[in-house]
Picture 1 (spheres, helix red, strand yellow):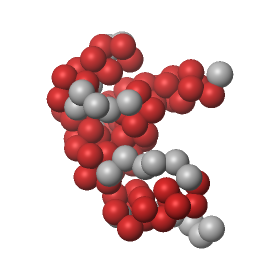
Picture 2 (picture 1 turned 180 degrees about the horizontal axis):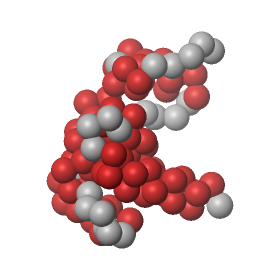
Picture 3 (picture 1 turned 90 degrees about the vertical axis):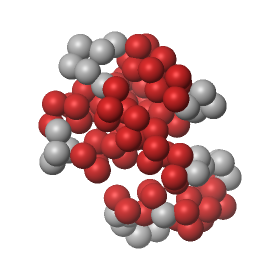
Picture 4 (picture 1 turned 90 degrees about the horizontal axis):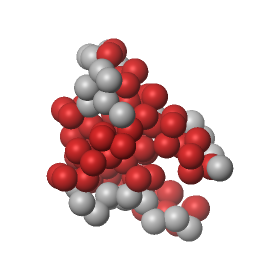
Length: 103
């Protein structure tokens, strides 16, 4: 299990390998990236997580909360150097959702 690079998450082969390794179905890499792009477009400074989920689900109705949180982490990595404010908001959302899922 070597180190992963941010491009690994968007590589369809990596997603298939991850599925085989973990047994969990991994969202298609293109859809994950599309959700991340949507998150970057719709997130605002004072947006509540519930409102962010609602806005994303308008464009991605089949996305699960877990997939949206995962896409948020990927969007943070991909966009941190471009828009620090949005990346911070997505980080808060993603961490809050991850914490809720693990409880």
